[in-house]
Image (cartoon, rainbow, N blue to C red; front, top):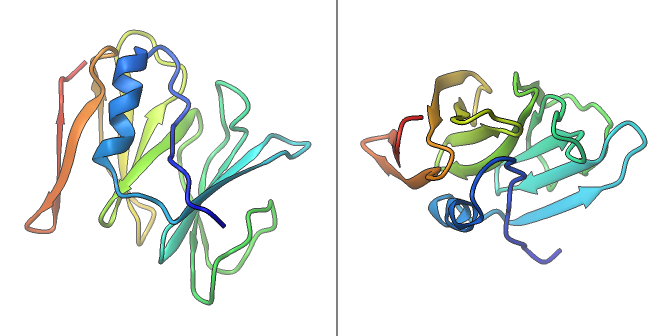
Length: 154
């Protein structure tokens, strides 16, 4: 499967800010969108995990799931597996990954754009904040095993 760029669905953010958000995160191995009667799915694969989003065809997506890739690439379907971690990300879309951190942003913000940082190993929410709607996250880097984000607080 050919790798494609991840462009999250971020309502209320200026197009210029959207163009930059994908450049700050790690490039996924692949991204696939799958029509589903209960809400379209989007799966984003990395070498060790897959992020499965549900209801990506609406401004209020369901919670995402973190799937550990224990033996090959997990399938992009609604089937529940043994190595899945449900994430508390209702109404958020996957923006990207940087090292061991996953970043999700609110899909239907009012003024500021809330975001959350989740540990890619445990699925635990580590940090929440909000960016200015016209700025977004401008940079992400790993330094001393910590994620450092550059953004204007909203």
